[in-house]
Image (tube, rainbow, N blue to C red; front, side):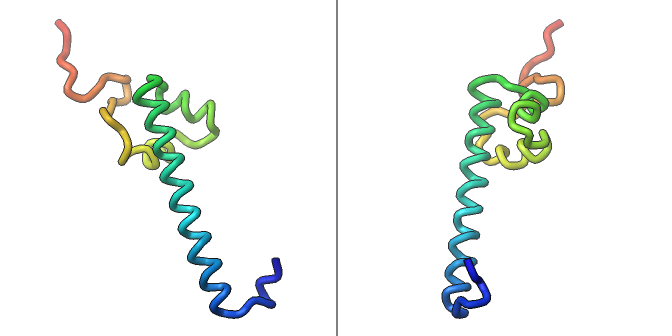
Length: 83
């Protein structure tokens, strides 16, 4: 694709469409990561190992889609300490 040969309005449309596609892709990634964590019980380090997405990035992308947050030890927030 020769961007130099494109008209300004075509470049604006291209940039807008690319950004929309990027946001949609990141949202879909976040939803998939949340399901891996919530439904399949995978830890963030395991998700990182399987996907190649750093665990902090995976968590950030999934954050809005998570059902229940877990702490670093894998305990779900709100779990009572057993004693």
